[in-house]
Length: 375
Image 1 (spheres, rainbow, N blue to C red):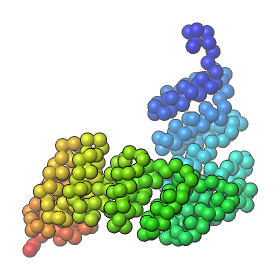
Image 2 (image 1 turned 90 degrees about the horizontal axis):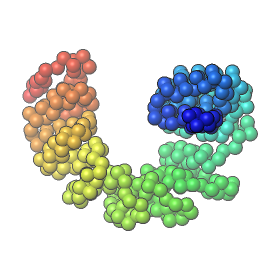
Image 3 (image 1 turned 90 degrees about the vertical axis):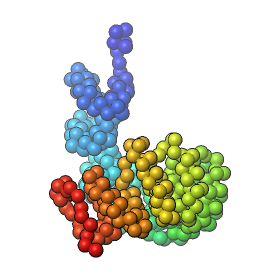
Image 4 (image 1 turned 180 degrees about the vertical axis):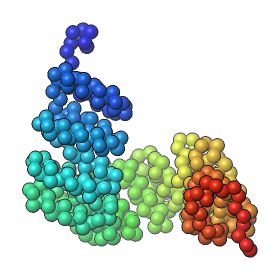
């Protein structure tokens, strides 16, 4: 553009900054920003917001806050929501709450800010703060939207109050708010989690919007968790959307829990070339160990290592317990020593299974070989 004497605009440079940020080239983005600013360009809210979001995505809140201060000095609009979202994602909603008075003073409060905070406190199991924020936003003349009410549907479902959650869903419709796919899926997840699978399916048939992958996965997982494996498998095979790894994992886990190991392994064979990952292996290894087919579990463990999928503490736990059930204590201790070598911290179950005392990290790093406890 410059070579052809076409002068780039602020929009052009904002697009360039956006590309740098999405490519995690923050150093180049900030250098370009200040170089252009010193050349006389005055950046607007969009450019500042792009950079602030870029820093927040990297967890660099210090730089994000510095830019916020600079925005205030330059009388630009304020992209506080990026900071609030990041703090809530980092499980620091109390810290995010401190931004609200500044936003109130500058008349920049928005329903999205409250939604982020309410969701942040809900995920920290602090429903009292979530309800307090709901009251405060209405006092300030900011009214809840579909996202706000969906968060409260989740809060009620997590507390086992599915009746109240369903009432809230109906109230949304009466208030003229149209619950979206996320709203209905949240309600179905609540029904499933609390054992009301049939109610979840009734709602599924009535929902006026298009179900998503998450909707189907939620129902499949609900059926598996409530021993309705045939219904889960039928939905898994008949649904319009192609099953993803979450659906496969839910289905494999459900089949393993019910003891249908051959069927579970067939599904694993379907998904194996695409996306092998720890949770799927864990379900199968656990199922085979409980059936006493530890040789199959060993094959899967070896396959994991060949594919550079590292076993986690749960898989070591399963193998150690499996060997002990067969009376192969030497192999149990061998697995224990192996996980220590891999710097994986054993949990309480492993120590209890093997009758060992817990070790601190220094002892783990200096470990050579653990002797069996006195019989």
